[in-house]
Image (tube, rainbow, N blue to C red; front, side, top):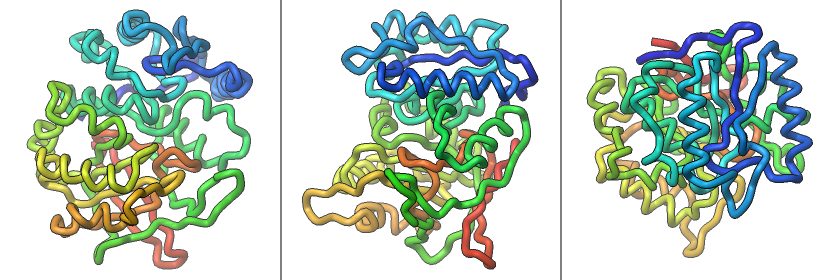
Length: 325
């Protein structure tokens, strides 16, 4: 696995808009994010379309791909962070010049709709990518200090232990600890995953390089994490069936399901049932309500890294350790 170089003081971060841009009502928050990133010692630039948002995209597919290709190629830029998520990143996949990725390796970070890009880069090219949060989140002032610090530390080459928060922020703080729905709750392996809503779009396509990744790192064991944005429990059940039958769970040693903003179902199907219906037979640890997802606070996950999930017996909080191996 190839890990991009750590960021140094005055290194350039480019904010990209491969899917949607920043909506007008979020510009103030976004500008606070730029200020905060600058205060961390980075120089921040942005692509042409970051501050645009119309019909769910920052610009046309051609424009977005051109900006991304230029950012990937630019040797002065040391990291790319998506400004926001969206729905239409897949429109640019066929237009990205992936042959240039290995010529100028850098951290690429985002959350949600950027998932197909991140998982393809990691699974196809053995380059680690970051699933954490999008750029505008750096402008939030209500988050735990450790959430932002952990992300910055990883960008700078440090590897913090990330400790379960045990709550979600949804208007107010709501207690919601991690929950194990299987017998075993500690595991390790090489981690990969992302937003399930977007992951399902690449199953069986030329951008599905998951089995290649699994074959190469099978001896390490594979840890999956899933961030559910808008899927119903029924959607989750069917998608787990798809992933299992596509061979994605070969060599799996454990699964992390992120915290759901709202659990939705139309048939009385519970989240636990939706998960266990297809995955119970894997006989691996499965945790739900983890600090991954569309509700804060969240962990910074390094696709392609080795991780170890343990539980502190004193306070019953889970700990995720990341290893650059």
